[in-house]
Image (cartoon, rainbow, N blue to C red):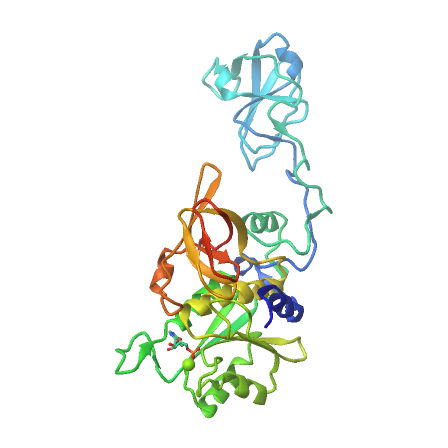
Length: 410
Ligand code: AMP
Ligand code: MG
């Protein structure tokens, strides 16, 4: 049976970044830039004041105090009309252009107007002798026209969107956002809005996977529930194969109604692997459908909600990262001390829902009480997966184990 690492490599080998597409700035957060972006401006566009105060000639304040004629007032958005000469100053507000002749700005806090009127105003200044350039941000110090300010491959966060706006971009070329269809399968399933009858349960995986896909930065398409019949599966799966990725939950184990793999094969999806050496999640199925614009990926996740979630985290999330043009999107791995003694039993590497706390630079991990992979409720307290190698073993409290941090927001 494939190891988790081998299976992941096979998944990633088929996951190529999506084609680039133009995207409006307002929709680009979280996407990856597919072009180098060049500035069309110098920033700042002029030498500008970074404080409210008086633009002066530093030499006039060599001994720290002077009375100066005020030529005019320049606020942000206005332009100076007079040059500052020996014995004069211009009142200037943050962001406004520095008048010619001035080489420093003194903060308003160090000044006192001597006349109230605006016409022949004078100001008294008393401060530490200003250095040339004091409180002035020089033209183009942040970026120069023609300079590449963002490189293809960078992920667009709020900060990058601000930079794009600064250089006048209202749309950019990005790696397309992957579209994932989610299909729950099972004769026993009813939608959340229904009261389950005898033998039935509600479809929790559908909403769980839709949310996890969206939180991973992709677009989710909820295909609802298919029944465990060839006809129902065929129709829903054919529909799901329109998307870049199809995630199916249930129907991939060894039960008599686990028909998903055979229907996928019938629809031309080539199996890459079936079954991975892990717990929970062993029945995981993965295959690809060749298409002109690149392989479509199909994940058959085991139906138990915890298995579905673990398989999503270990295999689907990294695939979404790759399709989105991001680097490694796997869960962050940390070394953590067991907060209590723990007995692990089982012949497969286990990914156990756990609570990870960090204090004083130490990571402490507490595996949650295992009620089997149908126990979604336990996951409410989980923020990590504790990793135990195959084999029965008693772990003493304080032993270091590997933990995978679940994302904070999803
Ligand atoms: P399967 O993988 O189809 O054999 O399902 C394994 C277990 O997961 C069974 O107990 C199913 O009832 C349960 N299950 C399957 N699909 C879902 C779902 N969408 N939501 C909640 N439980 C499910
Ligand atoms: Mg089933």
